[in-house]
Image (cartoon, rainbow, N blue to C red; front, side, top):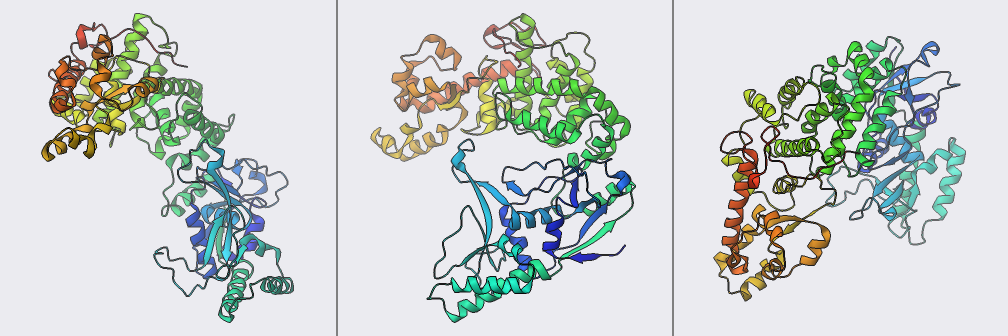
Length: 611
């Protein structure tokens, strides 16, 4: 069958009536600006590329789960609703063209909700639900200054009808769908023209008429929807066509391409809703906000099922998917435990630099489903501490960054040998990864790099947590400047009589790790921006030990800030070296002589519960 074409209005009528989406389609991802560019192309009568449809035979209609097109989108992402196709006589699935068709539906009949700048997501006032409007007085021949988008017509999204004035006359674009015949449209155009301001010039009237006529033509007369309909009912063939058709443009997530295959194999479970729902739960339903995607979950399924760790479509064949389904409940439980454990360490969507680094921890918990790490037994405390140190250092060292499959294979090989209830094998993990070029010592260069970390970076928070024995960071500590930033203002340093060179050195050192600590909010508020020397003299001896503050009180004076930094960096260097085995190439003696009963990791008292 060759290509056919139809109008935008005709296609819109079919969306969520005859036209639906297969599960293999990714979600709608276009931003409002992209929607505007599409409508500008329609008004310009430009080609908008071809479309690919698949007509499903009546006998196969109930074999595949299909989804509705999004009519009301949000900038945070919108999940497609499962469609009810009862009574649909000619079910057609869109294989290529979802983003364009959804954009047309939003622009003509729907809305786009966006977050306002500088507003927090949790604030209801942060969200603006907008519709698409067209300025009928905008001359497409006149280019706007500083507009490199190539947009000629005056499309814009607004949350309420914009005010008309001498230069602007707005029409909600969806109004054009009301006029499917020439007479009705002519009456509407005359009524609308009567509403133009008395100051409207003849040139503006000309632009008004041309724009309105062009919009009607673009939606009702032109046929930019050039489509080919595939009739073959072989799903493997259709999937292959889909992959090839979507080879360009916005890259599809592998997990999205796989969902249809998963659905076909998981006939007892709505795989798409299950996977999407679980990812949403991980990101928004636990103690901290996370930022996992479907790819992380599918990758974890491969690793935990002892399948090939490469994230390739060929690894999600029918036997493997059946195996994953049989293990799904255990996989979910282990993933939730692992994420909750990481969250208790203060590691979340802002600081989990590589999600793959968490998979070995999840695999460890999966292999030992009865393990909770929730008590204060010696085993629980030591295991929790070992996992925290290993995960944090793995993130700092970037072991699971680019080409992380090697590291995952090495970790799984070690963890797969565990028998019964076993401790987290830190030393063995580091040794095995080193053999494959992914481990090695946290050497002097790595320590020096850690000391150079500065305020406000994800890796800085991770490094700071290593300075403390705490396993549980659920109290959301704040990164604090030991010598407050207010002291480093040019005015204050001038008042202290510091010369220009000294001021420059002070400024360079101000945000470094050596001047940073973690404090709970109440303590940080008490400290405020006052003199450090005054504050520290009011603290107990245990505070000095906990935060690695040099005992030499002469260093607590702002005039000796450089000496303070050098002294504290030595304390940090000793802490990291003893904790991470910088000199020996592995984990060695614990800080302050703490016992090393579990794989060479210094273990404090206290525990953490995984919810």
